[in-house]
Length: 311
View (cartoon, rainbow, N blue to C red):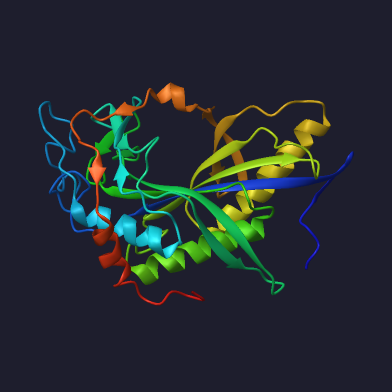
């Protein structure tokens, strides 16, 4: 067993606690709730239906392929598949979210607890718990480079199906977090449920980081949004953990907030104060009935699973 990863401070050693939320774009020819195509590199606003654009009266229809891919992924991470799940509205205002809410899953996700075994450089392995996998819509894209005065919106990505795979806060070093993302990405690619292309943004990661003295309660966490490479995940954790230790040792306190990683400077910076679930006013989407799948549906998918790495 290797020496545990520690940050050396003035008052002794600190332990870093890491949890990851991986957003994986579902391999599907059309979007989660509309028939619009999913294509990378299309002309701006070419693949947009009235549902994606948030036109009044347009009703979402669930894409069965996306549900099948979510179940396939759940089986690949040895997770519990929930035969009944519910789509909720996550309410917030953003220019590239035309509906004024995101259709996601809150209390009743399609996939429950699972696990992933990662191999580390010293030859040891570690089991990382997975809290849940839920299905949700992606937002559009804000384009800032076309004008110094205006932001333009491209809705090609709006409504594309995502799987959000949430880990337990089980990782204790940047190396473990990097190994987890690499392993998860490999499994998704083997399963054919996501192409794992981080450069195109088809796999993005929100990194939750806190620090504590070994054996203490968890500290206050900060979330670093949309980190899009394994190397940047490693660097973001290193910087953020050190930043938090320096603040705590100077007698300050950590604010729960959302931060961005700047790959040019290798630093994280404040984006906004972190919202809690009640800030989003989740409620079941009245346009969508609870999603009910059968055990046979799950078993049929299980029968087609490929052999996975070290499965």
